[in-house]
Amino acid sequence: MKCFCRSDCRLWRPGPVRTMSSSDGPTAPFTALAVSRPAESVTHVQLHRPAKRNAMNKAFWSEMVECFQQISDDQACRVVVISGAGTMFTAGIDLMDMAADIVQPEGDDTARIAWNLRKLIRRYQETFSVLEKCPKPVVVAVHGACIGGGVDLITACDIRLCTQDAWFQVKEVDIGLAADVGTLQRLPKVIGSRSLVNELALTARKMYADEAKSSGLVSRVFPDQEAMMAGALEMAAEIVARSPVAVQGTKINLIYSRDHGVAEGLDYMATWNMSMLQTQDVMKSAQAAMEKKSPKETLFSKL
Ligand SMILES: CCC/C=C/C=C/C(=O)SCCNC(=O)CCNC(=O)[C@H](O)C(C)(C)COP(=O)(O)OP(=O)(O)OC[C@H]1O[C@@H](n2cnc3c(N)ncnc32)[C@H](O)[C@@H]1OP(=O)(O)O
Image (cartoon, rainbow, N blue to C red; front, side, top):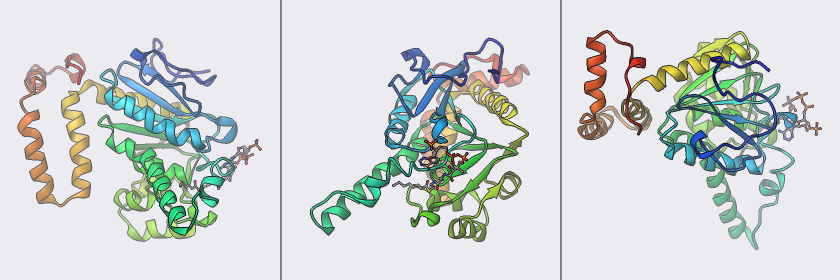
């Protein structure tokens, strides 16, 4: 199977799910995810149930949280790439594995059932909120279908790429649900047109790659998966080359500004940088720029 980046890399290739040593990133024995380190400081998290079209089963919902909590604390990781194994990105929630939780929630009476259901939904929401809480940028690479929970997932990522054959579907209304794990909150902040968001969420119509690009859901469309993964890793290398203090501060402040007014955002930024401007990375980066060196030639301490 082809490698999507440098010849000396250790990129994941389709095969059995691997667990990694601590220097390679998250270590849990994941069953729904495959985690690898394809290049220095890059963690690749792959949705890995190809025979089930990467449908999001119970294991998936908790493994994502565990995986991204580990990545957040992993100084050897500066950027994450997410992709899907097999013929598509994901078929969304696993309708077989998850049905009991949603359709027959536990509890002795209405209040207790409702209470338990609320806790459950909050827990499922965390599965994608961890992507935003992770200070390392998350690039998601979508090929084929991205259905239901897949849209919840990608809207919590920082950069979205797709292949020409990709399509996106806010499918929840088709299965009698109002999407409840992020799409309705984040998609309107990703796509400029409120009307388009409403149309997609209310009709569950498929949106194909060209419209995803023109509407701003993705920033780049690649001819195929191989080109997309090479592009994702190139982009990851650009991010890795920059100061982690600058990169992580940028992600955190971009998300803060999305959720707050300009004045509050500026205030938060000033408070942020009153510490972070004191980093040695500013002097190192400025010196490299003066010497017309590429950021790739500058070494930054781990963060
Ligand atoms: C509180 C939590 C909130 C979260 C909410 C999230 C909601 C959602 O995600 S709504 C969307 C739910 N998903 C769907 O409705 C998609 C259903 N699947 C399909 O339409 C097709 O399978 C698909 C177009 C994705 C792929 O078609 P293809 O012909 O390529 O494959 P199939 O032969 O249909 O499927 C292959 C095997 O995968 C299993 N599978 C596919 N999707 C799911 C799924 N969502 N859940 C469980 N299993 C799925 C399918 O049963 C086949 O398995 P097997 O028969 O054992 O080979």
